[in-house]
Image (cartoon, rainbow, N blue to C red; front, side, top):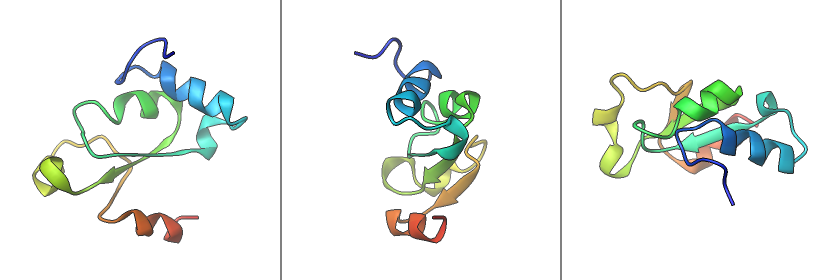
Amino acid sequence: DLIEPKPSYKPFLVAATALVLDPKECFYVGNDPAIDFEGANIAGMTTLHLVRGKHGERSLLGCEADGHIVNLADLMELA
């Protein structure tokens, strides 16, 4: 059970702790700028906006993610 839902930072810290990782070692990929990046950024994770679907390119303006990808395969280039 989550303590608080997104955009709270707490679920991100719970996830990192469960994986025995420092949040700075984690990437968080989301597609909804309205709720996906604030908490992960506060937790210290690197955030990536997956630009597709209903929150596609028009959501880039004001997006708080550290970077943008268009395909999950793009993650391999970051590893």
